Amino acid sequence: MLDVLKQLALLGGLKGFVSVSSGELAKMLNISQQSASKKILELINNNMIERNFGHKRQLIKITKKGLNLLQKEYADYQRIFEEMKKISLKGVVTSGMGEGKYYLSVRGYREQFKRKLGFNPYNGTLNLKILEPNKIGILKESDGAKIDGFQDGERTFGNGKCFPAKIKNVDCAVIIPERSHYSDIIEVISADYLREKLGISDGDEIEVEVKL
Amino acid sequence: MLDVLKQLALLGGLKGFVSVSSGELAKMLNISQQSASKKILELINNNMIERNFGHKRQLIKITKKGLNLLQKEYADYQRIFEEMKKISLKGVVTSGMGEGKYYLSVRGYREQFKRKLGFNPYNGTLNLKILEPNKIGILKESDGAKIDGFQDGERTFGNGKCFPAKIKNVDCAVIIPERSHYSDIIEVISADYLREKLGISDGDEIEVEVKL
DNA sequence: ATTACTAGGCAGCGAGTAA
DNA sequence: TTTACTCGCTGCCTAGTAA
Image (cartoon, rainbow over the protein chains, first blue to last red):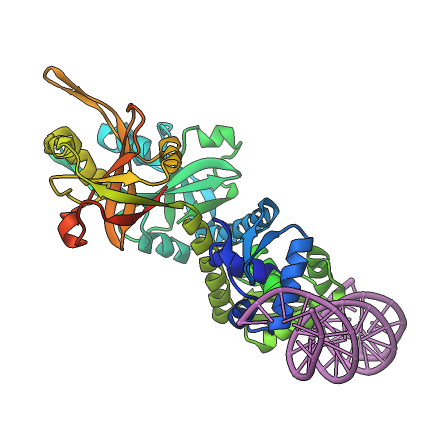
C-alpha cells in the first residue's frame, strides 16, 4: 500500500492530479493490473488519495493524509542516514598543557570558531584521551568545517578542521589540526566550561558524539 | 521485508551489530514474534542482513546489499520531496524596457548574483508575462536567496530575492524585487543570452521550473 | 482501451510448541 | 528466556471476464 502511494508520489501525485491507469501502475510495481486497481481502491478508502475520472482514464492526487504518511516515512529515512554520519568516541578526561587555551586566545582562530560553529567558545579546551585511537583516523579523513591558518607577525598558525559534536547532549566541537604528529588525544571546545557543566574531571570516561 | 530492514536500520543496524530479539522487533512492527523471526530469516537468505548469536540473543547487522536497498528507497523519497519544492510557471516572452540590463550593469547587484547563484549573469534579462499570475504570489511568499539593497551615491537600490530555475534544462534564475507594484511579468537571468540559446523570441510560450 | 468484479489457489500470518 | 518449526486459516494475488 505504501509502495503504491510512493509510486504515485514519484509520478507527481503530490503536486496535482496525475493520469495513470491501473495497468501502467501495475507494470511499475511488478504486480497485476487487478492488484493495482484494488490497491487504488484501498488507498481511496483510507483517504490517502483522491480520484476523478477524466474520460475513461483516472486522475489521481495524493491527499493531506497521504502526504503525512509519506513525510513520516521520509523522516525515518532521514533519521537513519543522519545517524550514519555520526561517530561515537569514548575517551578519558585529561589535563592538557594549556596550549588549547592559548589557541583560543588568538583572535584569528576564535573568530573562525564563532562563525563556523555558531557559538563563542569558552576560553579553554577539554582534552580527551581516546580509547579507540583508530577512530580518530576517521575524523582525519573526513571533511569538517575548515579552519584557515594565518600569519600573525612572526608566528604561523596552521590549518585545521572542526566537527560539531555532543557530549551528554551538550553541544561542543572537536578540533583536528591539519598537521600533527600522531596523538590519541583530541581537543573539544564548547560555549561552556565543560568540566563544570558536565560535572567531570580528570580520569572520568565520557563519550563524544561527533557529526561528520 | 523492507519495513523490517528499515526498523533494523533505525535501531542502528547500519553502524554495527545490534542486539534485538525477534519478539522485540515484532512489537515494534505490530506483527507476531513468529513472523518477525521468519522475516529475519528471509532477510538473511537475501543477504540483506548478517547475524551472529551472542549467547542466546541474536546480533544483527545490515549488509552492503541491505544498505543499497535502503539508499535506493531514501533516494526515492528525496526525489519526491525535492520535486515538491519546485513550481512551474508558464509565460510568454516579452520585451522589457531595458531596466533589467541596467540593473545587471550595477556592480552591487551583479556581484551578488554571481556569488549567490554561482554563475556570472549575461548582461540582460528575459521578461516573461506569466499566464497564471497568482503563482507569482507563491514566489513572493517564499524565501529565496536574498539580494541585499544598497546605496550608490544618490540612488537607492532595493532588496530583492532570487530563485534558481530552469528553462528547458538551461540553468537560470528568477528575480523578485522586494517592493514592487503588482505585475504579471517576471525577469529571468542566466549565464547565457537565453533568446539565442533557447531559440525563442517575443510571443513564444515557455515554461520555467523554479526551485523554491 | 479502461476499471473492477468473482473465483480459486497459494502465500503469509499467528498459535502452539519444540529445542 | 530465546529462535524457529509445523499447521491451519485468513486474506492477498492473479486469471478470467464483465461493464
